[in-house]
Image (cartoon, rainbow, N blue to C red; front, side):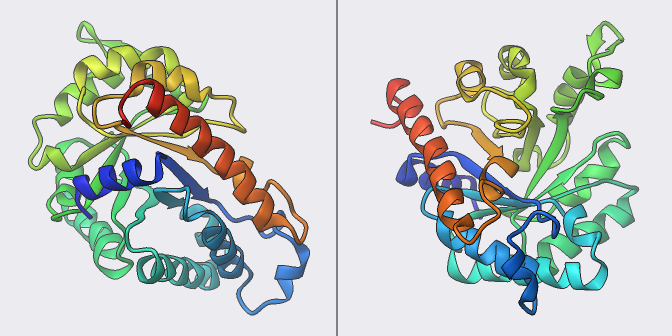
Length: 276
């Protein structure tokens, strides 16, 4: 998928909503547990109910790996279903990979070639040669962890180093890497006050923003300093949407919550005159 295709979807749907497919068998409706593949059935139903207001889906691979081979098969079926039925939608493997070069190449092959995801989240701690193998894939995106939404982000990411802040150093340094145009960045919604400084460093990059909803992040606060001329944001919501209900009406309730966010995004885009 190209950057322009993502932008086109945002304008068409008047939405920059990414839905996280973080499936916990203890939280899904009980009746699905009687099906052959409860995880896939849950995902399929959520996707069918929300695809018209979402521009991206982001399965967190830990929620599939936890169930062993069966979970991985569910992930394969989910991404195959998305690519076949909704090929215009951006798909993100929230895998947080990153290792020495040859290992990163294999991770990239697994998610980009075998599973056919459009993007993958990657940790930058091991530096250039751990990230560039992901960036080598044409029309695929590497989403670098920059400033995350968890409390522990302050342990390292905001530390001063060499007259800079570590997360800013990551942003600045990554711009010099090969195929850096294929980079996006994770910036947590709970760190909304940092977006203004981040946009000074990477004004044109897409930011994947978790933390809206269950984690307490504010959509309005993020957009105030995070929007750019191409929108440049993918706002992720997981639990608040997919677990809006654990009864037989779960798909309907998920659609309601997703539509609320989409309508709020539409208003913000129209107010900011990004969508005419």
